[in-house]
Each structure stands twice: as C-alpha cells, then as structure tokens.
Image 1 (cartoon, rainbow, N blue to C red):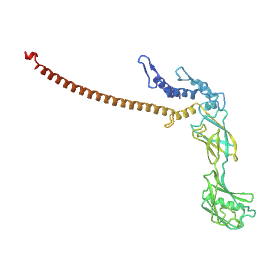
Image 2 (tube, rainbow, N blue to C red; image 1 turned 90 degrees about the vertical axis):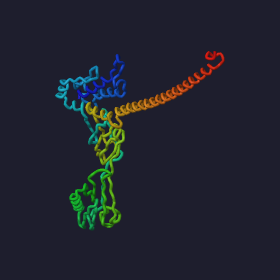
Image 3 (cartoon, one colour; image 1 turned 90 degrees about the horizontal axis):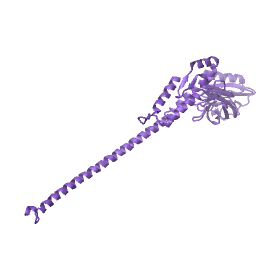
Image 4 (cartoon, helix red, strand yellow; image 1 turned 180 degrees about the vertical axis):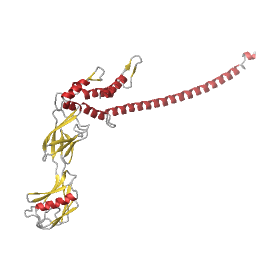
Length: 369
C-alpha cells in the first residue's frame, strides 16, 4: 500500500514541477484536478476512523506518517506492536466494519457505501414487508365437504372428515413434493396458506372447486374455478433520511446517496423507527471507494478532467486548422495581388517604352537634329 501510494505521489510531484531555467512546467503543472486529487488522497489516509470508537483512530498510530513531500513513511515496528496489542483496532482502522441495532440486520454493503459517522443512520420504515397469505373461513368443524384446491398450479384434494391439521398436512405434502416455497398451517379455526418468501414478487394464486359460502374453505375466488391472487408487499422506508429501495425484507440504499449499496434485512412488522446502523470505513476501505469514484468511466472526476483536457486540445486543434485556412487564403490573396501588380508593371513598362519611342520623333529630339 505504501509503495503504491508513494509511487503515485512521486509521479504527481515530478510532473507538477516548474523548471525556472527553461521556464517550462511539467505535464501536470497547474492542473486543479491533480492538485485536488493529491489532497483527497492524503485525506483518505490521514482522516479519523472513529465511527465505532476505540483507541486506534489515526494512521500515524499504526506506523503511517507523512514526510514533507507528502509521501508516506512506514514504521513497521509500530504496526507490529499494534497488531499484537489491538488486532481488532487494526481491522477497524483499515477495513470496513458494520453494526446494527433494533429490528435491522446488515446483509451487505458496497464500496460506494459511505461512513455513517459516530451518530449512525436511523432506519425509518413506512411499510413493513409481508408474505402472501390466504386464510380460510371459520372451520371449527374441520373439513365438512369434499373440495379441490389449486394453488399456484398444483392441485390438492381435501375430503370431508379431515381435521384442519390433516388438511394442512395434505397441503404441505404436495408443497414439499413439488418443491414449492409455500406452507400451510392452522391458526385457531382457520386454515392458513402462506408463501415462504417475503415481498411483492411472491404471490399465491388459489382456485377452489366450490363457491364461497357452500361449506368449504372459501379460499380462492368467490365462484368455483375463479382464481384469487394473494400478494405480499415489499418493505419501504429510508436509511439515514435518504431514499432506499425495498425488495421483500431487504432495504437497499439508493444510488447517489450516502447509503448507496447498503443492504439491510428489516424484520419490523409495522411502520416506524426499526433501528439504526453504523458503517465504519477504514483507510484501505475508503481509499478503494474513493479511487473507484474518481476513475469511474462516466462520472469520475479524473475522467471529467481528462475529457475537459481532450476537449481543450480538440478546440485548439480546430482553431489551428481555422488559422491555417485563414493564412492559406491570405497567401492566395497576396499571390493574386502580386500577379496583378506584375501585370500592371509590365503594362507600364511597355507604355513607357512606347512613349520614349514617340518622343524621339518630336521636333528637337536628339534623334532628329
């Protein structure tokens, strides 16, 4: 890490120099983008890492300090000492560490996920995730009539005399054999069928062979053969007050927010504050994220700077081409003017010779004495 960092800083310093004798600057001399990059690189290393607390919060405590040329000087003995006395602190100092409380668990994060700071981010839920669920009518006497249920395309026969537990077992046997992510159970005097997976992408389609009110389960559509679809819903809410996207119980920070790429499993069953999260970005972790951002092929600051320089070069080339065309046209005009002048001078000389000849014939001319 130190060698790579110093190689880059050395390259920048070399090409930012100005030769006072030759009065010529390096390729990067005066570049605002490069000056800003150098400052930001140093900030990634020298900034505090104190989101999750602990005694080890600065690179200098782990043997990394800067010299007068903005290069890193590495004290391996200091690092080894810290590894022996505080290995978890070293992990926090260089890597990414997360923590969550309440009805929130951290599922994952990306290099774009920001550091929450010591205060963390509250997770506010506006809609809790649910699973597609279908409940029967009151069946205190169990199954009293024969009925065929078609659930997500699979058929199950319920026969008169079955208890609700027997009916649930029959349903679960088909669900297991068909490897369906669906389960049946008994809640009070009702038969309940529920999708195992959360969210709006997972639904139940149920068709009954009986009309509602004819003594059956009343699952499915109101009329026999008519399907009824039961749907779950995705979690919805915000992370740290910023937009997030829900899929099932997974809440993900939206693009271009501080929480971008942060994935949370939210088990809350009602709207409100579900908990809070802390994300600590250590030196190597935030350096990775920073470099990905500045070198992004579309939005990176270095990419934009290079595009700007390329645009300037293109504009200069266009001005040079236009100037060359102007010069060519000017030369053509001079050549035309010169040719016209030569023609006029030739005519003038011819006229002068004719006049001289005519003057020789005048009385008193030298040729006539």
